[in-house]
Figure 1 (cartoon, rainbow, N blue to C red):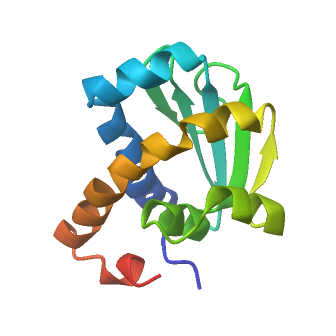
Figure 2: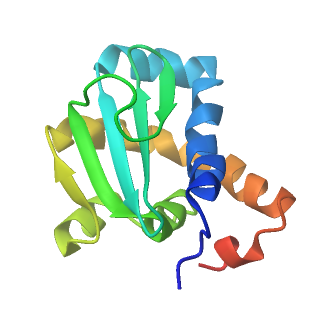
Figure 3: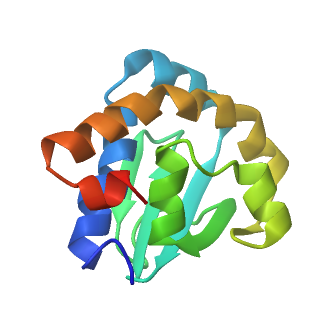
Length: 136
């Protein structure tokens, strides 16, 4: 059974971690020059998040935001487990748990920056009383 019950929950929690990242001026200063426009298509439940790093914007919903140059496809549960530090993206790509399109090497170069959002993501789940997502 999927840990997220609705598209709105995916946007609240998984979208929320990207919004927090965009509120961090130091992080944005490192991501903006990469030129990465990342679209993540989640399933179970379906949701789409586009992270426009040069434009410093997050777009939630299919067909919204600029065209991506890197795309990731995964279940929302895999996304949750990634932000908890339980999924190593290169390994998940190799195992087929995450599919990618575009210059993934570019994304992998900035991947270590994501680790600074693991703590705030976990804190958001804790404050929302989502032990089901924390235990995933």
